[in-house]
Each structure stands twice: as C-alpha cells, then as structure tokens.
Length: 330
Image 1 (cartoon, rainbow, N blue to C red):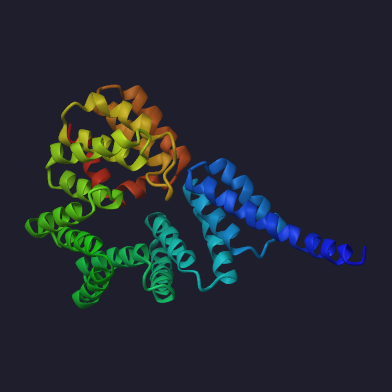
Image 2 (image 1 turned 90 degrees about the horizontal axis):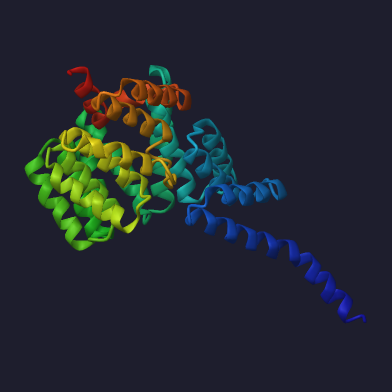
C-alpha cells in the first residue's frame, strides 16, 4: 500500500497537466481544420483554467481577428507576448492586427500603430530569423514604405536577399511583388512565374500572382488561377473573393459574381480576410452593376453594420477603389 500511495499522488498531480496538454492539442487541431467556433470553446476553457497560458491567449487573438474584433485581438496578443516574449508568431500577428486597424484610424492613430507595428514586425524576425511569414510580411511593409519615400531601397533589398537565402521560391515571389509595387511590371511577371514553377501548389504564390494578373488587366489568366484554387477547395474565401473582383473588373460575365461572392462568404479564412463587411460591400457593387439598386443598398447597409469603417477600408484598397469608381462612372 505504501508503494501505491506515492504513485497515486504523482498520477493525480500530473493529471491536470496531461489534460491541459491534450486540450491544447485538440483546440489547436480544431483551429487548423478551420472549425473556429469549437476551437474558441476549447481555448476559452484553457484560458479560464490557466490565465497564464500564452498559447490560449494567442489563439483567442487569432479568433478575434477572424471575427474582425481588432481591439479584442490586440489585447489577447499583448497578453500572449507578455507571457511568451520569445515566440515569433505572437509578435507577427500583433503586427498584422495593427496593420488591419490602421486604415480606420485618424492621423495620430495611424502614426502610433505604424510605429508599434514596425517594432513588433522587427521583433518577430529577431526572435526567429527563419520565420518566412514574418520576413515576407516585413518585406511587404518596407517595400510599400519605400514606394512612398521614407524607407531606403537598401533595406528592402536586404530583406529580399534574406528571404532568397532561406527559400528560393519565396525569394522570387518577393522580387515579383517588389517590381509590381514599383510598377516595373515587365520585371514582375518573370519573377512571379519562376516562383510558380518552383512551387506550383503554393497558395500564397498562386494568390499573389493572380492578384498581379488581375491588376495589370490579364483577367483570363487570373480567373484560371482562382478557379483552379476553387476546384480544390470550393469554400476558399480568398480565391472566391479574388475571382469575384476579377469578374467585376473585367466586366465579363458580371452575373457570375453574386454566386461566387456568396460562396466565398461561407467559411472564414485563417487571417479573417476578406472580412464579411468587404464581401457584402463587394456584393453591393455587383448588384449595382447588374441594375438591382434595392439589393445593392441592402448589401451596403449590411457592410456598414458589420464594420463602420468599411468606407475607409475601400479607400485604402486599390482593387476595391477601382470597382467603386466603375459604378460611379456609369
């Protein structure tokens, strides 16, 4: 009996840890499978059980971001960073959330969030130099800042070279995006094609190249990429939204756009983009183009109800601004 009592006590002591580990793994798996409602239940239970669990705070931030609750997401990411300052993804997603909030801020708010965002982005790379998503995100911020003046080209090129050293395909993608941002389209296309050839199944590369093709007016090629992605995953939110935008910008078969956009408004994407408000706003444009002003107004009211800052988000998006101007000119 003396032998079994200590063993029993040890087992009882370890039991909550094992349960927590199992629950964290299960909740994380639900998140990866995009079963977000069930994942939230799991992570909220973990956070209630142990408020110092950084992974629970991180995933609750991701879930709030998917729901477009930016302030809630920032609080969770800040808590996760306090508890796990050496985790690169915590800093990365904090920075991404600040980027999402910036278009709806005033001038002072934009400056404040911009400084916080750059600090968090740099910290994400500093903590884990091999985090390619963090490096690609920082590169995009630097490249757009260089386009408008404050960042030198050397900083952008250094980031591109660092990406190339770690992943050749993503390096070509970075070159393609940089040339596109600088409006060197004849250089952008071959870089994109090299990235696609090296990783033909990579969704990030496919979506970026399709966006480039759409923006330079090569609509049929863009449609082919989006439809290929949707053939593999009919509920792919970004691909569905991209296809809907392309159909509107091409002004060919705009009657297809409502069905495409409605299907895209099903399962949320892991980063919450496009938001429900963006989809409803674009549906409004679609119905306006088709002459159904009543349904257009309904969709725009829904978009405004979901996100009062949708007008500023449209202004900040070149593609959305372009389709908005297309109905104003009619």
